[in-house]
Image (tube, rainbow, N blue to C red; front, side):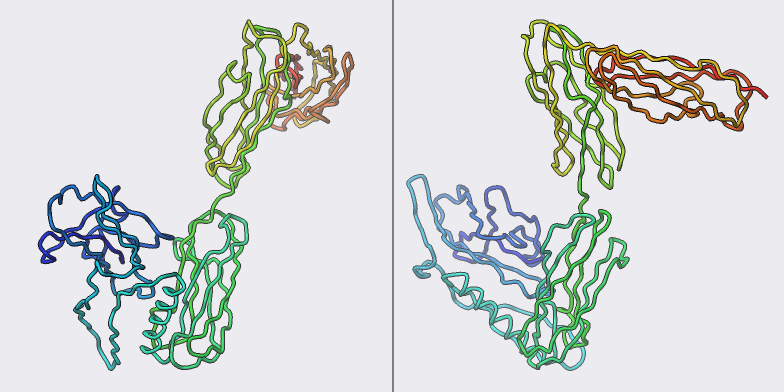
Length: 478
């Protein structure tokens, strides 16, 4: 709504043309400039701009800086410019730092026309607008502050409002969001204590939180700072509002608001049961990976591999997971035939949508004598006769026939896989050792008569190809 642009005239100021900086203006249309393009908002500091004047070569020209504002919000400072230089291929033609004087500029008073529409009895005070040359931010702030204070104080005797609202902390979900406000007595009369309310509403206008504080008494021109805290919940877009609740002569400054996004905290997680594999040149090896999304909402993860073993296989480069969803991945690697013996590193990097990273470091040892992993199981009994609604016990004996200690995962599959529970479904056994685990088959009450086959398996975590499976036959009778 408010902004400024730079203009040029080739006819001694009778008409003016907007010239654009390299890259163009931030806004294609500014209300206060009658729809012309220009700068707007808060630049956050000095911005350097360059204008190409090649189309005006050989012309006698004038420049002007045009600023325009609408009538809605009147507490902005305006537009500052400094250090103007005109150059050509031969060097500088004009250079003015503006601190040394203003001989190159016309500071004659400008005439502004204004239309006022009102009903009732009002006191109208009009102050001249001034273009000022200042040498520092302290002078600037003092000048602007005194001018705005005078205008506001002169316009109303009874006037309190919100001068400032700022978000002080990160706006993450399930966190304490801090914000502060400055409440000011803009009027010419001292004010007794009055209420100020802070509230948070969602995008549908529903109030999520509110708190009321007492401010004052405040003498004319005095301010008071209020610090607020709101405990956020799920990610969403909300509006934070601070409002003075006192009835006064000027409602335009009673409220300030800030739109913020309560941001989801991304929590990617990647893990594996065995981060070290061994193999010979030319061997195929497999890592079983699990990727979890532990955030409160759906997220998209980017996945990449780095390290000396990263060229031995491929992995999905992107994955979308819902909240608390997990995905199993089999990372198949083939060791190159000409690979030398030794250790080769592999890092799996999972990056969430906000840049949060989780890494999993793996190691592949290439050797002429890789560790052998092997497993065998026995079931007792292998044939069961029972009736619907009954529980039947069985045992699984696991033999570690491998060269080293290993952990084995027990699982059931087949038509009756949901009937089975184990006392424990992961068992660690030393080399050449064995262990027996009890299990229970709970036949549903609505199970039909006949034969049901349940597969029981044990899988090595060190080498998922080391696997054994046996079958239990369950005969359901009337």
